[in-house]
Length: 316
Image (tube, rainbow, N blue to C red; front, side):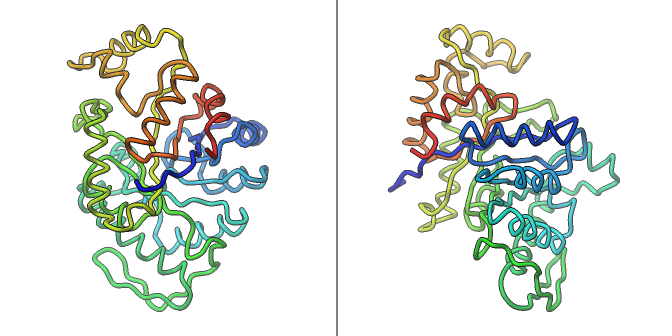
């Protein structure tokens, strides 16, 4: 990276037992200095993201809202474009559009939605993104692809942010990350999941694996690479003065039955933050220098744990 973006932080939240509880989460994220409240898009135990994101925007002044990420197979792209533009309009230009190809087979099966091979789902998402961008633009839009057809349709409303809200695409595989490099404004990094569905493949969570992912993005983006904002989803934050002891414990519990998960590997995994506030700040600064990653997302369970780090690094 020739320039370093200032840090900003997002929190991924999705559950609340009442409106008051959800609004309190949004207020807390804003007051603690987080840039963005982000929501996943699943059919299980979570709020519906579109109305929940709008409620969060209505209750706050500066907090951005974002899908992290919409499952493309749950909405036709024409409707997604309208809903996304409406979110951006009603939030005063604070929306970030995260889009993914879908990955959780069980919810597809439960809902009776065909779970196509990954290549098909990614191709369909690529077409959908082209349509969404086309409908955000001025004038009638037409498209004829393998999965969608749109004929002389003018998208309404138009988003406040022009030419479109920031678009986030993330993942762990080469094809999806290459698509993100070419089509998104924010590229998100996660490790891939094991083929047997048993969880994260921790061999794909190493510094070397992340370097490979960034190389794919750099190659696909070409001269536009420096224009991209790079995001990482942190699986867990552990604040402790006993860093090595914590790593030993994590190594024995993080992936039971998986060989090769040593304390040394745990401390090097860029999707984990372990140590004192000073140590975590040092690690994030070093990782920004090494990888160019400046946008850090944590889960709601770590909202307050990371807050001292957010206070020190946000905007710097």
